[in-house]
Amino acid sequence: MTFGIMRMENLFSIRSFCIRDFLRHLFFVGLVALAGACASPEKVLYLQDVDRFKQQKISEAYEVRLHKDDLLAIMVNSKNPELALPFNLPMVTYQLGTNMGATGQQRVLGYLVDSEGNIDFPILGKLHVDGLTRLQLTERIKNKLIDGDLIRDPIVTVQLLNYKISVMGEVARPGSFSISSDRVTLLEALSMAGDLTIYGKRDRVAVIRESEGKRTVLYHDLRSADIFESPCYYLQQNDIVYVEPNKAKIGQSEINQNNSVGVWLSAISVLMSVVTMIVTLK
Image (cartoon, rainbow, N blue to C red; front, side):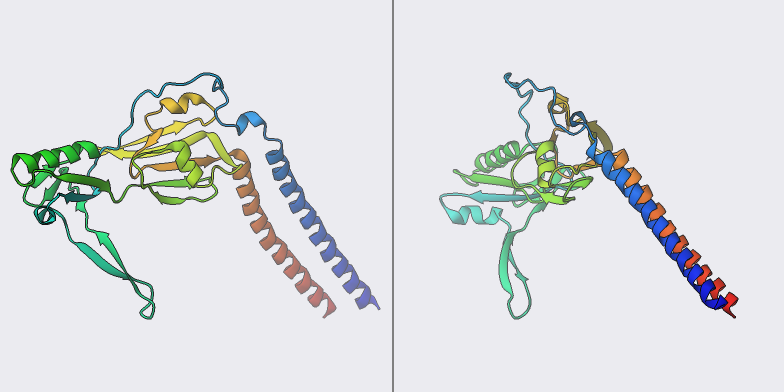
């Protein structure tokens, strides 16, 4: 009878301890949820100081400029296709899928801009392209073909094959994104990543840019129209956008870490209680 009473008391103590631990975790989670719910609109709304009835002049026309390590697709066409043929890299075919259902895909080989900013173009030789826009490179190649009496009516197309940007941090879908057009803005990049989560700091959105052997980190406040004046508003190839987490997210991470430690401590405590009960019964 005495052993039965002791066993019931130990089980009651274990159950009480587990209930208290559960309530403590529930309390912390509730605090985090309350903190997120109490966020004021001034902390999350974009472009709060924009005048709705005033047109803003775009300060400069943005054009992508070619850099080292860019991969370029350059196509030359003419009324006489045979004249343009020596200036075009061949199309290559590769297989996609399994052996049973493989399909052939074609792609254009590209010109890689080397460490000195040059490409090696057929017949024309080395061309310095670093710092040029696509239109400027197009005109340069056309002029060289005409001046060299190689093609009288060249049609030249230049396209970037590796134009991508990366978005990371407190966004819905972080990752790298390929850009098919000539330009992408900071707001468009965030939209491609599914926008900021509620835990992202609207006033601490960084753009990390590497150019000419230097790395620049510029922070932006999405709540202000000043982002339109930023040199990083129009993103360049290989830019990285990083959204910092706010205090609520950091606090939640700390709570989750503490909860993990608490679970282990609870398990150890329960195990010790069971061992103690067994020893007492013996």
